[in-house]
Image 1 (spheres, rainbow, N blue to C red):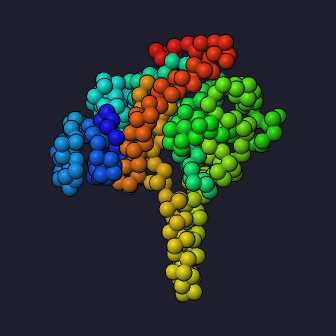
Image 2 (tube, rainbow, N blue to C red):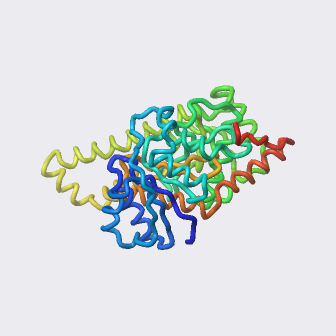
Image 3 (cartoon, rainbow, N blue to C red):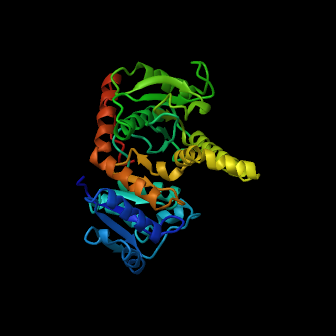
Length: 351
């Protein structure tokens, strides 16, 4: 896989340089054509690189010792976009020094910097944060928006659906992904006016590369019955946190149950293959790498607590989106939607 290099914010995340460099090195062991621009404190990055000889000759360092704080307000971080490791990583994409940026830092700050530097694509009002979630089937489900926009009207939701379907075709290989809107019920009369209007527009759009299946309730998100779940950022973030909390609850409950007595410990040894499979399936590192869709460039958000394996997965997500040209895929689908409506989407990239 030969790709433009990936800018890595080496200072972001809970553990910073060590894990970010180790994750990039792991990704390169899997794909030896990967090239990196490592942004952060040069001394610390060079020290971390000593443990990863496979990164020699594949990495350039862009020195920067200013870091965006995890609880820093996006408006404040935005004023330091030209001096922080996060801002410089995103700006490298804008300037063409890198094809994509990966950061495990402050989500709000990363969105603000990305939107300012890269701007939204023509025909997209707002970018959306999309992520992969595990299901009972072999494939993951894509969900968006997960917090970039606290509210969304029908037009936004339709655009989110187009972007999510394009993403699903890349990561899951589905020709026509099953797309549904998150709602409080599956009946056509349920939900807000925006949801009902968006459903009507998607139902009427026969030329899109998706299969719109109406509404889905939150308890069905992980069943494997849908490929793309579309919602506003407020509801999406709540649903995501509830799913993550439920996964941790199940894991902790099993740990408590299996250590409560000698018999339970014996039972754990017998059932260990099954519990290890469950642990693997629920491990967020295996699904790490949320994407800001709708920008004129690729930016991937790694979870702040991600391990090196999680960071490697985020890097691979960025590479996959570059390889399959996610931006042009979305643009083509938006053009098809505009033709069906009899309208050509306006260029709103400068707004």
